[in-house]
Length: 367
Image (cartoon, rainbow, N blue to C red; front, side, top):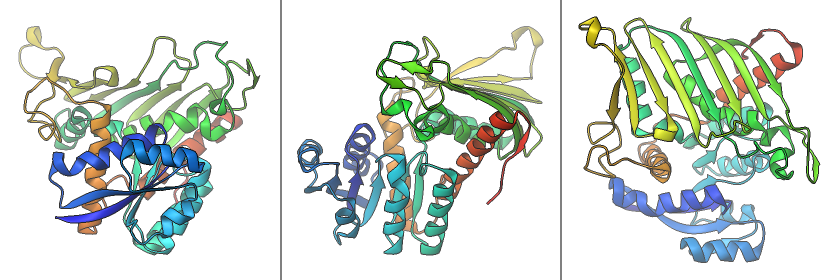
């Protein structure tokens, strides 16, 4: 086993999740590389010290450059706002350090393309954080599709819907300013990533994106509340996706339905330890969707629990990401999703925003 010094930039919601993941991944997955919480960076010295103490880091700083250039920081996790991603990643890659970056990569498609270019010139390990597709249930869904269990996929429907801004009187905050913080920048990337993972590349689409509540207490809303799109996948399948932060009653509506020539699959993140599978076989009278409860027979479940149906949770998805990042560093081999995979999500989002403006079908650009 080899110790590796970890630096995390951003100590808030996701910074904490990654700190907890790095502190526990070695014990759960018996990784060859064992993370050491070396340094955390926050916006002020006071908050950096608070996070350092709370999460167990050796040191804290309010300057990300100090963290990136510190020789004891051997791998970097970016969990700071999108507009900071590009500069941090480029600086880290320039000195050959591995980088894990939370989604979405950068504040724009141009940012993500520049980050991919820097990563590929450097040759350093790079990954982007899409945790929901890593549940044992969704990993099993990918496996079933790849094995042909439901035949050729003909149709996909996906959504990522939540209701944290369903109340029109909820006050304006940083979330209501700038497109990177709107629904297409915040929620849509998760389901688009899921669609790409499950079905494959999107080639063209037509979309609508809108702001429903243009004024909120404390300010004008400058980004989007919801969006929808129809699309075609490279394999010929039809697709529909919907994204919303004003979906009343929805708390974690990461949902997909997939239809194939021999069966179908359904999943809802609010019941993340179950997958519904239909097989077009046997007596018609007994056919129907079967609820599969995840257990040790499914990908990445057993390290957390030996009991079927006991379930995994949100933090476990982040721990699986940490295992993948460490394995990529250890082996020197790319593990999905790389920065290029993250950029492909941003290319779909850029096409959707362009389509919403032009009111026409748009091709998804290839970089």
